[in-house]
Image (cartoon, rainbow, N blue to C red):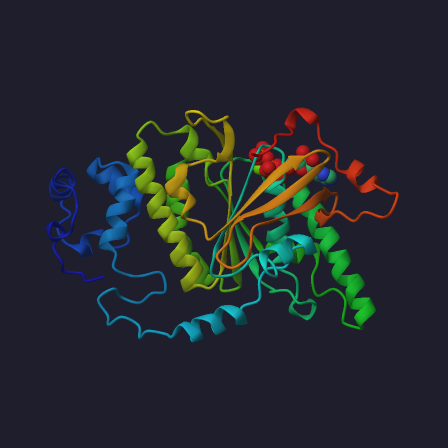
Length: 359
Ligand code: ATP
Ligand code: MG
């Protein structure tokens, strides 16, 4: 941060400039180490505006380099491709889903799972938070996860079930391959999930704002999950232009985190009904079309008949496709059907009232 730069030289709204001046904040040094809530209390400026002001005035980028330093030298497209290919994706416990995504949930990108209530978005997030910790000897990333819960739907007992199944699977593989067992335990998995509960959009924005520092301190983090990104922005907002601005800023923060720390960002989103003149109403991902550009990969989860399906709706490199999946006691899995045996379909039944078809 350039500590002596006058705050009036920043593109801050005049009304906020005068509030900052009246409260005695004149140069960037004065805002150093202040939290958005403290600045808001001192100046009477709204919390989210304070967050924006601190972001603007604080010149440190997420990797700790200064904005005023010379830009990094360009890298060739080939180097970029090689770098991306050298980063293994997060394998899930559904081979069909992994294949559809090109190997798993990719690092350096934003993947969004959209779907109606009960279809499996939270289960998918928990599965990924566990899978990212699979030891490298089994082809995993041996990483850790940040889990941001905006809805209060994170149930730690459910994470324990999924962790147990994953640990058992790894131990079984270790026995077969002659590796040491116990490289991953339920306790190690639970310790590797850094959990945040955000009760409103201000808490969510503040948490995302603080993630670069947190990830620097926990370099094993390979995925940030937000379940769901839509919740607070669908219910707390009347001012749609403010909502769009905040969502755009948050999307930029996610892109920066993904690329600078080489981690996966996994978001969930709800579905909403879209009415277009002359067309039947249909279910589409919430938060509007501009938010649709935020994610690199978009997967829509939906019910059809007795089965849950994952539909790769948007991807920069893979063609649109669909795979069925199921949720078992152990987590998200492929549907394995044997001739004349469809018992798997029945093990994953859901009240028909919850099933909604996506058109
Ligand atoms: P919402 O939008 O309401 O948050 P969601 O898409 O996040 O919904 P999830 O909570 O991920 O939905 O999925 C809930 C479904 O997962 C349950 O309805 C159930 O079918 C399945 N499920 C949860 N726990 C288990 C389990 N232990 N065994 C089998 N299926 C389970
Ligand atoms: Mg959920």
